[in-house]
Length: 354
Length: 215
Image (cartoon, rainbow over all chains, first blue to last red; front, top):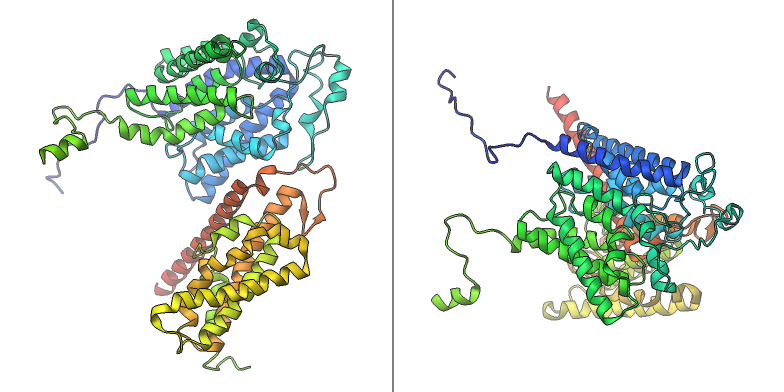
């Protein structure tokens, strides 16, 4: 044992920026806090309870599945916190809490633990959870409540406190009591799509109308830019998603002037939240620079197609899930050439020379 | 009935129930497993229908195993199976038209259930009648058990009832996804996970016990 080699052998990367997984995750979670705060201010107690439920649900599920798999606790890597916050932010404020808990368990269980935990999940866990409850409770997840109503900090929306497994009460009478003028319970996109109404852009930017807790385009942009400057997310992903969405919206408007324009498309629905915080999930997005662009354009395109032609008003969730699923394929197509290696030949030219 | 009768092999019966369960271990016959388990009663009916076809075709294949020429055996098995599927088809239609409509084309599709053909080819054509019948019964009950496992979960969550009996009252919020095809995949995955987890735990406990004995 005396002449044991003193050289330490490691695989790349050798130069490290210093930010490890925990640091990145913690920063992303911090960047989500202003959004959560803004959502709570606008939607009151219901939003706070729902965010708390999804957060605790995700942590609980993470611990449970850790134990089932005989692993040490992975609560410390903050990824479950992000999943919980993102999931809560993507749900409507009046969503029943027990459904929020179901969504949290679906997110961590189906989206993450099943594939082997953090770093193995092909799809964004928060979106898997949301897609599950969208398929399970289609009515509850499309019931929207108005923002900034009176008494929002003392009384939750009645549907929030529905008993487990039971249908939430109809919030119609409650809305009537609040006498929220002109509130139709439809999101800006649905209003445009089905009723031909347009929404003032300022409402969209601040998240004034009906929508998910975290739908405040301007604030998302600020938080996202903060992360991009800290190099904790790949700026190419949101930029390419936004650019392609705008481009396709502009094209659609050329053919049909009544279609929503680029600015509305960008600021409505979950596009901003999805583009900055969900599509940028480091596990589910491609790794090569070109691949990232293809990924972004694909998400933008699918979003447009679903929003314009699909049965649903919004489409960012499915677009990102589809993009996540395509990411390994995109990575394979866009492998950069190894430095110094011969240029890869196409099969046709290979056959010719053979 | 003696347990030591050489013609009666209880092992082959119990294997089908658990150790070689056609659904949870061999993953055969996935089409009916996923398609008709949206309620417990559908699952039970499909399981029993399949068990009947298994038993009857197992009996006939085993009886005729020396007469069937090797070259055309698959076609012969299919013909035998199809005969009994036709019988089941008419039987269910006669007993309950509602059930018949709920199960739809999947009754006729029992013909192409690879588990039945697999039993005929791998077991009934090589064993005596009594053994073949026991094997078919084990497999059929194992199949029914698996279908019921899926059907119960999907009906309770997807409709709030069990065998048509309301469990939660009228306020129940159904999990729509559970009665849709994705629900079938999710619940099947869940059961597979649970059984594999149990199996692994038991194997680990076994290993530990042996290690302790060796010490």
